[in-house]
Structures are given as C-alpha cells and as structure tokens.
Length: 543
Image (cartoon, rainbow, N blue to C red; front, top):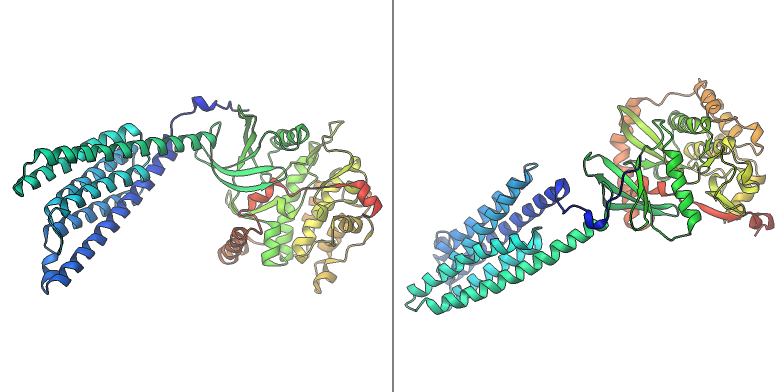
C-alpha cells in the first residue's frame, strides 16, 4: 500500500526522535566546548600569575577568578557526561540546556570581580561583557532552539551581568546607574543578535528537514547514485528500522525512465523470497519525486568481495549461488525476469535472521514481466551490463527469458570462483562479441588449479550460447546445485570467521576507495544499477 505523502506545508516541526537525538548531541558538544574553554582560560591565567610573581602559580589556584573558571569547567563536564550516558528525555534536555546556559552566564558575570596579573582597571568589566556575548552567540549557533526560547533565556541570563557590573562600579566608588544602562543596552543587543541567529539557523534546519522528508521517511545521507536512481539511508518516523530509500527526481530521461522505475517497484514488491530485497513502501511527493523504501543492507556486494578478496572457495560460491538462484526461482515462477543479474546486484550481509553470509538480490530495475506484451525498454538498445549479458540479450532482446538470467548467473559464479569476468575486452562491443562467438575458458584452466567437476560443468552449461542447452529456469539450476556432492560445504563457523577477520578489513578498504572517488561507499550503492544501453546496430557493424 502506498503511504500518502504530506505536502511540505503540513510537515511537522522538527521534533520526535531525530530532533531529540540531535539536541542531545549538540548539548554534549556545547558542554565539551565549555569545559575546554574554561580549562584553557584557567591555565592561561595561572601561567600569567606565575610569571608575575614566584608565588603567583600557587596563589592562582585559589584566586576567585580561577575558582569561577573551574566551576565553569565542572558545569561543562557534567553536561557533557550526562548527555553521553545514554538516551535522555526531551524535557530533561530542555532543562539541561537552560541550566548549562544560565550557570555559565552567571559565572561569566561574576568574572567582573576578578583581575588577572597586569590588567588595567576596567578591563574585567569589558571581559565580562565579551564572555556573556560569546556565550549567547555560541549557544545560538550550536544548540537547535526556537527564537522565542533563545530570547527568553537571553533576557534572563543578561540580567546577571547587569547586576554584577552595577555592584562592581559601586564598589569602585562610581555611580552605578549609567554603567547599568550601558550594560543593559549592550546585553540587549547581544540577545537580539543571538535571537536572530537562532531564528535563521532554526529556520534553515526546518527547511532542510522538509526537503529531506518523503512521507514517513527522513533521508539521512546519500549512499549511492546511478543510472536508475539515487539511494539514501533513511529512517521511518514510527518504526525506527534501518531503511534505504531509492528515488527518481522528475525529468531525467523522460516518461520511459519513470515508467521503468515505477514498474521496478510494482514487480519487486510481489516477491517475498528471503534472498530478495524487501520493499516496504512506495509513493510520490507533491514535487513529482517517485520513491520507494526497501530494507537497508550493510555489507559487501559480490563485485567488491571478489575485487578485494580474490577468488572465493567453491563451497562459498555454491552457498551464494544457491541463495541467488532461490531468489530468481521465485521470480521466474511468477513470470518475472531480472535481466541484470551481476555481482554488483547481489549484496552479501554478515548475518540476517540468524543465518550467516546472507545474499540479497537487488535492483530489479530492468525486470521483464513475461505476462506483458510490451516492454518499456527501447527495441534498438541492449539493456543490461555487458560483462554479464546473455547472447540473446544482445541480438534479440525479445527472446530474453529465464535462461538469460541463468547465463548471467553463470557469469556471476565464474567471477566469484576465478576473480575474473568470463570475457574481457577493450570496449563494450568487443565484450559483446565474445559473448556471441567465444567459448569460455574453463574455470580450472583460468585458475591454474583443480575446480570441483560438478560445479565447473554446471557453470559452463549456463554459459552455453544457445539458450536451449542451459538449465530451463532457476529452479532446475538450484536442484542441480543441491545435488553436487564433491564440494566441501561453507559452514556458519567459516562464514562468521571470515566476517570477523577478513570482513572488516575488506569493508574498510571498500569505503577508503569510495572516499577517493573510485567506488561506492556501501554495498547497496550498487543496487541503483550501473546499466549500459548499447545499440544493437553497433554490434552488427563491429563498431
């Protein structure tokens, strides 16, 4: 069922769990900043006192100004520690915000009664006003707050320096009225600036939140982008489950692309196999952005696995192929053909539902419904990824069927087993020519070492040029795979051991490569599809 998407004007204010967690994080940061600044001022003051007189360092520890700074440091440390202990209710955070701000402002106001070595008369007055001003500005920048709340807290906090500076002037023998007026005007100006800052920053946060809100889903960060859409990590307002949201903005390649994208959702949502990515929801925003929400997969895709870890053991190859074949078998039984089976579209997750090394098939963006007489893909183009294309997908896309997916699945198994694609070439046309005319090198010959006969025969049967010589559908492939007896099993212990030792290293390497701009940052990035469209006429011309 499609969830209605609320117009931007009716979106709620930034409250709820995301806002609460963000407020707690910001208050922890503000407490840490207060701690660092207070300790820094204390050490600088003590050092200056030590330079002024030999006994200055010892006396500085007990000087009133330094004790005030230690109080500010203690307040900041308590706020930071409290926010780091665990989840705090929103009411507690609001109270902590007010307490931290007012205590620090009071201590800043009391600094008017202290002097540092070498200070001229009156400098403590200016220092107090600057500290109060800095405190107001820092809170307005760091803490998410409405303008009204900043105004109220600012007015209360500003009363402290008005009182303390008036008392200070009275103790200095001057009339307190005029200094009180000037201090009040200064503080009111500082409060006005802080209130405007809160209003602007809070408003910008609200606008960003609304821009990143799709129905009940809040987009948190972009994790991938490709020809078939953009994927974001997101969270649901109520369920709080990890979610990936894939969306296609209006425009792009026109109605053909949008129609293909929407069909992906409708067809994939009919599949319930545990090794097929689960679709939670889909809809369209008032701005015309079509989106759907699916389960968030944190792991490695098979392309990343083989690229960074090399050829995989036959037992693991069989373990992965069995899961992928099970996903495709369900699709084939209901008349759906994936048409873009490739290593990047199979994500391997460490654990799922108590099982280890779980494979998930994603990106049904080129899926073909055999019950439909028409197909939205253009007839003069080849849809798919060239390294894993079946011959008939190149010469006659209308003949694409379940056996075409099995050809691609054979290419995936070959890649996992050897660490290399079945065919390579200098360009797309050359690769497609190999799929049409070249015989694949047996995996054992490619590896230079023995490969279980049953697995090699099965993979080579999937790579037959003539579809009738391949397994008829994924269920038959699965039965043949289950009948193999000459392959050591890939156990849960082995899988858990790999994910404990090799897995973190490979994942870190993949993400480091992604930061350099050479690969996706997460496995699900590849689910958006690196799909190539090649004109069949170019293949015939050998261009």
